[in-house]
Image (cartoon, rainbow over all chains, first blue to last red; front, side):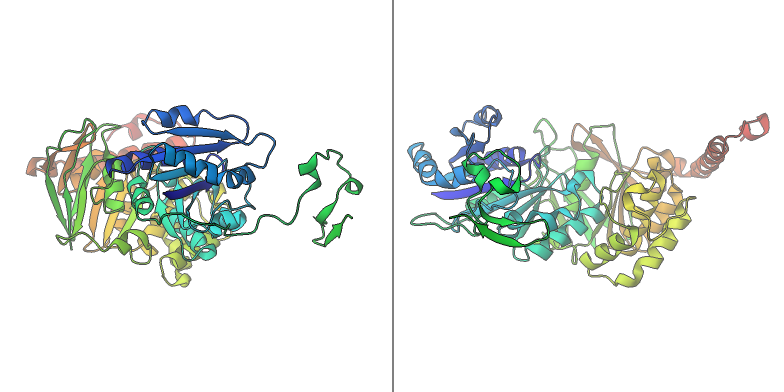
Length: 232
Length: 253
């Protein structure tokens, strides 16, 4: 089984690019299955289902969506296997830029929207810097010069990545992405994340809703950058 | 250099009528057709050297062979400069920083900035300064800067132009700057003057290339009168823009 994690900023066109790539994978004789992870609500599954591939939705609700996705990876893989799939495409919710939900043996795809500007690659962090493939979307909305400056910035933060210029409307770049998916390795055995998640368990995660500093515990960072541990 | 476009399929999946077009260095070729007929897709296929892997299924060859895959990805080696229809920059940075970064991405001398600004300012009436923010430039300034950036920084043997007439800049001058010497130029246009300045034009319909027309002698003969009409229209436009009232004298060609 191959595993592809499709992450990226909200609204960057992850689902549209993925749908075009699924068609290409089908033409190549592959059998993809899709798990779409979202927070509260999604209707992407009904869009993807029309392509005739097995689709499953996971709603993280009050759990961190990336943590949810990582926690359920084994289960998703065995589900995909039971559906007769040979590649599992896991589209993440695309929210947190600090986590990178990429297991080491998976193909890590980061979808990023060129219209977000050439400073965006500097802001994104491990989601972009640890990806194998960076799919740059909406390039038709900017000039060639802007696409090239954007690309330069991506290469600055992730020199080894493969950049695919894609368009979710026309399907540009999807064949290239499908080729990369087809050429990716099989996942088996124990996997590790490529990047450590954020510092520590956060008091908010355990249900604290009071805003003031004195109610919070853990490894905490002040506005001036000073980090300290507060707690038992 | 010869660029070959091998026909693919139109929007209905039927094979394109035109199966092959060869364009050699020094030729300016037009692309015409109604909105939605696939002109921009053809430009996009050329920009990425389609190898049957785009929705049209076309192949684009350089000197008869598929180009090295690296040419498609690395702007330092990409032999294509493209002026798209975009009228504005979205990058939140100064003109200086942007041109500097673009020169770096293309592996060009970062000292070319002053040449870019100088050239841009010959195309637009509103001066552009290096410390202006890109997003604050007017449509005309943005287009002028895009044209100058392509002519200087992206200076490439293949130039793709997707409509220059609506840009609010001196179009004939812009086409001359972009074409340079001995380049392959493909220009999408609805403008009769620009269309007749090309030697041939590809006609698009329903996503496919349907025919290639060579500019006839008869067409060439009224190029001069078209140019006069165009100059006249531009001068009237300038008067209107300046807030003046047209009189019968100006209204006569």
